[in-house]
Amino acid sequence: MRDRNIIWLYLFLLASLVDIAFLLEGNLGLRFFSKPLILLGLIIYFFQITRPIASTFLTKSILSALIFSWIGDILLLWPHLFIYGLGAFLMAQVCYIIGFKLAQSGSNRLDQVNFIKIFFFNLPIYLAAAFTFYLINPNLGGMKIPVIIYIIVIVSMVATARERFKKCNSASFWQVFIGAVFFFISDGAIAISRFFFDFPDSGIIIMGTYVVAQLLIVMGIRSFIIDPK
Image (cartoon, rainbow, N blue to C red; front, side, top):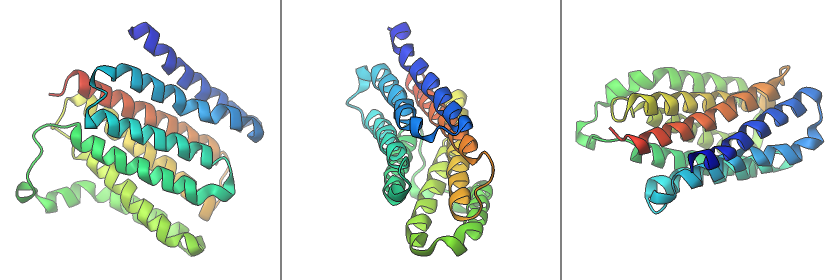
């Protein structure tokens, strides 16, 4: 079964490489064929490996995050649908937050949380988000409120991934956390290229960090399912 399931990972990796190759060559029209296949392979892979626990809220939340991301990928192929793509990815981040909360053990009650400690642990994330917003703010126009909401949600997603430290096995924590950071970098690169400065090879950086992010998150959740400790 494992050999059969890994075929979908090969589809994900092949579609990712082909899509990046189209970016390098400037064949943006062909990306309408390659980009939708990227997460489709990862969605099917995750669905197959979690079939025995398909009814759990963890599986549903992560699968929903992948599906919303897939929808966002497709919508962003059309620049005029950017706001809808942003909305799809916002829903994906919310689902990831829920999934990351579920994919841990020994969660603290609210009255046991050290908010000052958490703030300083998450400070680099806050500073990076604030700096990105500082750069893009003058050019946001009517997109300011949606972008602010999205920044808050994706920062929360990365912070939630970091808060899994010592609440799951080490492999799961690092894969999910690094994946969340790469997702943050990818979205930051999108924001900067769209609203501040379209730097050379921005598409390569955006897609390269994005596909690594999604793969690491899925493999990190898989690791938690195998060994929740």
